[in-house]
Image (cartoon, rainbow, N blue to C red; front, side, top):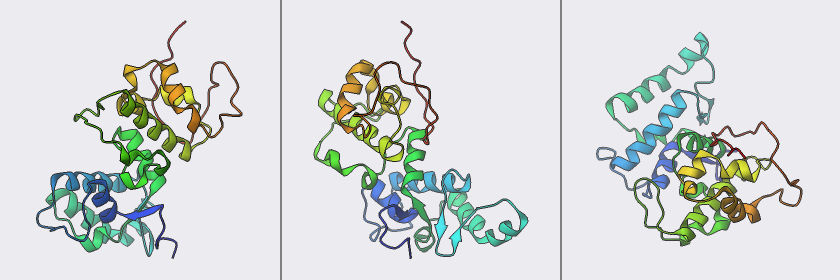
Length: 224
């Protein structure tokens, strides 16, 4: 089945654990750590609100608002409500819900939260950097800022290669999580230039207006 051993899909249980750097096989469901709880709830809320799609081996859940699908998904409404309202985390159920990499990354972009480590671009060797960060995502020095900005840009380009470097540099996710607000836009575009999949085809000058696959907010263009 396409869900088996597919790097683009993880179960909610698996992904939340990888996100929190925990072992999915060694968690006591009666004593869920706070960070793991946060990631599980974030995913379940996104699934319930149809921000991301959840799949089981029987197909997509919450696919439609019709009466037929309501009764078909009755057990899923019940189980996700128990999770959200009473904090009861059923391992077997959460391990049956698969989410897609692209949709989760898009969720992270819109929520201004870090990407799951398992889905951060490996080519940046990001895990080799030991960053001393605060809860506001402020890396300790310029080298770490550059690495983080490159990671964010590379991930965005994997989802939509047409995004202009200037728009990535001005995106609020890079400005906040990448600490880009501390630097000139030109500095950031220089940092990410080598990872631009269309760097050999970009035309000089002001970037054109474009509709991208990923919807993200940008800071206003400075007036000249």
